[in-house]
Length: 319
Image (cartoon, rainbow, N blue to C red; front, side, top):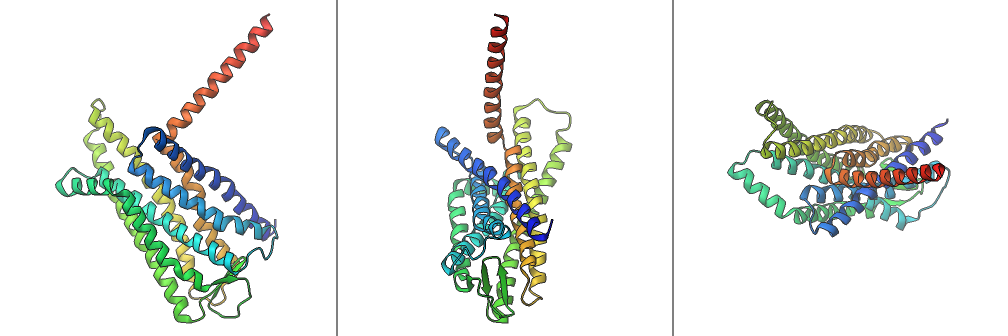
């Protein structure tokens, strides 16, 4: 298997897992919202995260796959700008919502002191405002994507990133380095926030485990147990993101020291950046109680149908 076939295989795996998984999460939470007239703030954040990851797969993974199987020159300048902008905003929303998710869960499991109660109320009541503010920030921040992205024209500038169908030419060394530093710093800031929140959640979980060891009967303990299950799911999501995003940003910083970065280097970064989009829905579906209820319901229906079919078949045989 040559490198091109390997790329095609990796990108099709990410596509096959990422699209159904994220689409399932978005649709299920929309249906729950319509049926129950409400959606928990955590599930609102997960819906936005799944939608961002879905857009990542459509805007970056599918073009990578098409290029890997030999389809050339599919995009003009307008398409390059549109897909590049969509990918960058979606990637930014993915990291920001993951960070928001960890910070929100940190607030939920924190002690019921005056300041934490205030934060719980404000964040819960204004979750849509917070998400829209983050979206607006990223839409403004990435407007430069329209300035630098163009269809593949084999730019000779040493400050060019070759991204399959498109080239991103920063034209000057200052623009090249400034762009890299700004966005890498933004990523590390949000990673640091989610890491700190996760460490605090872990601290609370360990302290709670010591306090309630052997006590499992009260409703309060049961409620805490549900919160802690959600906390463990958030920590797992954050761990996945820190691993993949850390490797991605490490390679990104390394490319800032190079000129005319090869396409293979950028492809490796894209695999790392997009792998989270395929893995996160698996974690969310396995650990989210609402989604598990839906899965158990359909399993029950399937078992009942199978049992009915088997009994009918046995009755026919006995006759």
